Length: 450
Ligand code: 2HG
Ligand code: ZN
Image 1 (cartoon, helix red, strand yellow):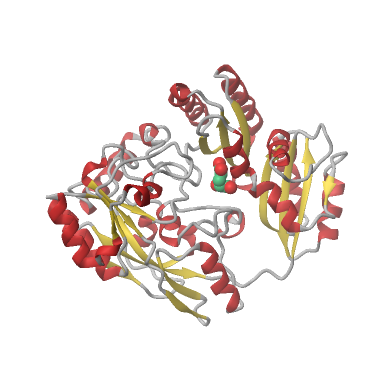
Image 2 (cartoon, helix red, strand yellow):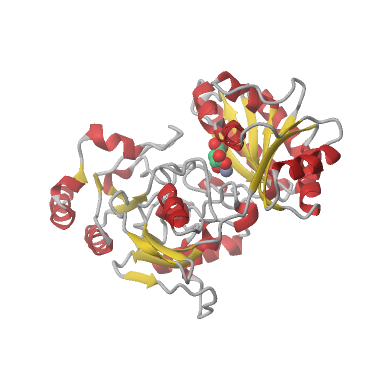
């Protein structure tokens, strides 16, 4: 049966786009962190929506599961097939790269699921506009995957995440039918928000093939500074001071001395004086760096303010965290992306330090502080202790009323903990939606744990 299906799929997408050579397929089977990998019959790369629909129909008829994959930059194992995936294919969006022209009057652009974030940003800029979402993996992350995970990123505080940018969507349902809502209307309140439902569905409800994205006017001017802080509460107070000064917050990124040390060891210059426990990178729109520095100098008391360094260099300190962490750990990094209520931040940071120390792991914390979003990275975790440590940290965040996934999603990594912070009725309602749209459980099985 599998051989017959693969021949059928080759008829649909062309033999060169049904990949089975283990050396080529390997890169599609393991995620960026190296923690999650699976097996698949083949990687299939349709050229457009019609081919995608046909692939889904043929796999459904053969009872073969479909694991949609974009740029494979996800961090929770949601973009790779299950470990027992002998009866799954990876459906790659690599060739879904259609780029419609920008509709300037509607401030919208239609793109295929395989278009990268950087391409969307360049297309918007060429039309004198901008895209509201930005993140460090912009050159590889694709629109389909970013919608499926409802990616957040560094400008969430100003523009929200991917769900908030969706004017329309095109997706293939498990039945092989194509759902297309494609009208560039800002207000369109007719029934359920299906594009919004597919955002964050992690490939479990449909295969996203394209999206109609909202664009925003570019910011007049931007200013970036990095400022030291004694505690997370102090860093939050600095953000508050900048906002109260009437500046528009575009990004507010927390870093720690340990994280800055690590990026320093991996090639970047030392940023702040020794002894600075925390640092926050603040980017505002509509003010110049002198105005931002003046507010920070007043609010930061004795803390150092770095405002004479080019913005790109300051941003590199923050954006190089993920790579430097991966290079520094002796085992695959345990990555936990969490939301913590503002009042509990400092206590939670202390708890993570204690839990990590007790397990012999090295914690590096950073994140999108204005959104209450912490990226807890645990290095040198003995592979046999990863689950136990994850459990402790996730239970601690749930006990504080936070979220076990702020922006990376649930994937395979957090599926066992879905019920932390979601009531039985909530989980049952999600399961009912899943059953209604994918009755045979063919779409991304195991992801979300529904
Ligand atoms: C970021 O904010 C990404 O840079 C990755 O969400 C976070 O590596 C991480 O833990
Ligand atoms: Zn992030």
